[in-house]
Every structure is written in structure tokens, then in C-alpha cells.
Length: 212
Image 1 (cartoon, helix red, strand yellow):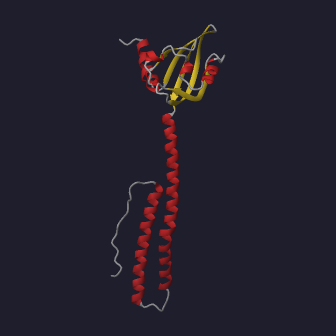
Image 2 (cartoon, rainbow, N blue to C red):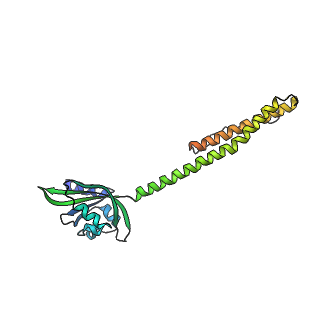
Image 3 (cartoon, rainbow, N blue to C red):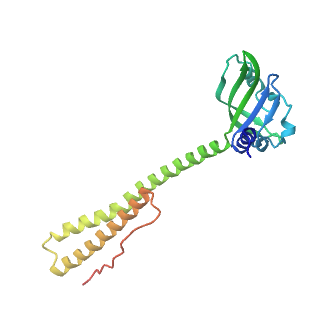
């Protein structure tokens, strides 16, 4: 049968935040498995340490724990948690004080690992840059690919109204216009696909005869 204390211990061991329980002397009396993973220290190595031994900003930790507030001391304070290999791990801390009849019993530190968040910010920044490059490419490609075709079609339309051109000549021009318009449609499809972010090109490939 699972007892409440065993259930609580299991929950604390499996959550992906680092927990440190301190006594009133600011010595660590409990740490969960995620704390061991971050610090690369065993539970027995963490237990008994002064909290300032694990954080690079000792002045910040001391002032944080010396706060006279009864409940949450501070939230979303960022500093570095020091590992056994002297790696500085960026964390966001929330700290609470435990009191009984105004007597201080201890503290709870909740530390969120910021490395994944920082990596996500980096990826988002790179994505924005790639999106900007893609938009610039589409703008340039749109002008360089579409403009010549549009000019060809416009020139053919002018020639078709010229009485000097014979019937056979106009027939050739109409076929050329048909090809140019089809190419323009394909170009628009490609540009639209790139601009919309779709990974697949859904184009209808048609055979076009220049001469009947």
C-alpha cells in the first residue's frame, strides 16, 4: 500500500524542477533527483551543504533568505547553480519560508533549469532570421521570374493588334503567349507554395504545344 509520505516522495523525485529543502540555519536537508542530475552530486553530498555553496551569487541567496516575508520570498529570480564539474547552470528560483507561530522552520527553493528555455529562444531567433531570408528571396524571385514573363505577354498582345503581321505570324504569337501564360502560372504556384511555408508543391503539369 502506498502511504502519503511515499507518494509525496515519488512525486518530488519525478518532477523536472530542482528542489532544495533548507533548515533554519540555511543548510540543505533534502534534495530531489533532479537536483542531483543538475549538480552531478549525490543526495548525501548535497545534504548538509550551506545553500550559498551551490549558487554563484552568494549575496543574492543570503539576502533572499533573510527576507522577513512569511510566504513566497521571491519569484523568477535568475542566477547560476554550480555543479560538481564547476558548470554554471542558469536557473530561475522561487523561494518560500516555513514558519510556525512566527518561528522560522526552514525554506524551500524551487529551481527551474533555463537551458532548455534559452535553447528554445535561440531556435526561435534563428527561425525568425530564416523566415526573413525566405521572404526576401520570394520578393526577389517574384520580381526576377514574373516580370520578364509579364513583359513578354504584354509585348505579344501589342503585336497581335498589328495589322502588318500575317495570320500565320499571329498564330505563332498566340501559341507563344499560351506558353508564357502557362509558365507564369507555374511560377506563381511555386512562389505561393514557398511563401505559404508548404513543404509539397502541388502543381498541375500540362503539355503545351507551341505549334498545332
